[in-house]
Image (cartoon, rainbow, N blue to C red; front, side, top):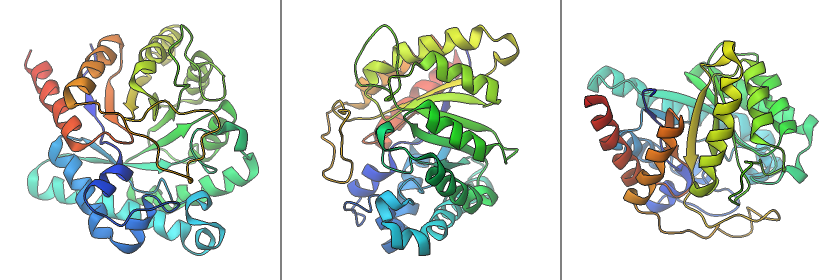
Length: 306
């Protein structure tokens, strides 16, 4: 069984939880603009709970959240600011606490989460390119988050091929348990995994979907990875959300998605199963708090001792 690496949890909801300025449509970008000390605090909360990788708070640095005008003037600047904040915290952990923390740059959906029907390739490539060059000098690796379709993956991969750093591609899944795992677009996880293997991606992750659908995705990804002998080292990762199931016509900027009540113990039970099936990187997405990450850390320590 592979060694377990722990990601952080959901930055947006953590910022809201700790009292950062937070509203739609700015989402997590509002704290970046008005109160960067809250961004620092949220990162530190996850590190103190056991996260080994923190993700730059650049998810909302897109026109969908900032609006066209603010994005044009400040989008790249804010993404750079997010990466530099995360970088400074990681460097401090290494220098003063002998704690190796890595920073992941984030390439988010350009036109809102969970909506492959809204994807526009030329515009998405321009946005991804701007976010890439803003963050690249300040991050250790890349995570493309909440990818809804193969078309979206292909555009992001065409941007991330410009880095020598490890790249992880994270897909969001249909929130329905079936015997074939599918992306929000209806395309299969097996096809997505094959493309990640061919592209030279370091790993395929699944995020911002309910925990119940992750098991089949891991099974399908592992079966595909195992069929590619030369790419058998591609990692599988999971960071599920704490939301109720998301519908195909979800409008992310209209209302806050309804939460469920997954306790740290509930989430840990899912994580144990994911790890047993082959996931070697586990963290949390929206609504997964430091207390959930703490439970993962404590469990990881027992694995390492055994």
